[in-house]
Length: 186
Image (cartoon, helix red, strand yellow):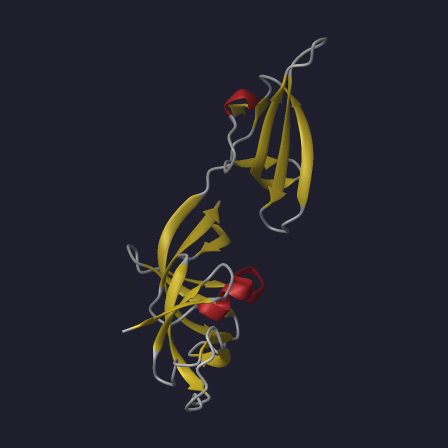
């Protein structure tokens, strides 16, 4: 248990409604009456946002989230398979939990998996990843318009917009949050 006065954004709370992450926290002291705490909470499993008010000093159950590094191995019928780097234990995570992050997962990539009571709840990737371009239309000679882009296919199957000079076989750095091209890696 933790006092509502000690809660900060980013903490996880195990409320009766489910597991929530604190998005926003505001301590309010009205001119008349007792102080209270207004929180914006995000359900970790569903993504739904909830506004909840607590009395100041009230105890709420704090959730302990275990974050460990795992290596991505492969995808099969059960989902995405990862291996713990310390214990060599393998876990399978459903495709619904991985979501769009699957477009940036390459074999042998290290990701951080957040677990609550032994169950994976989120996959945290680095801000950018380096992936090989498996298909790109050749750039037309003389077509050097500043800022022009073309679609290229990455090793994971994701199609992104990249500058005309990017060719098949190049390795590019991609932002995992937006899916945008950052730079070509030499």
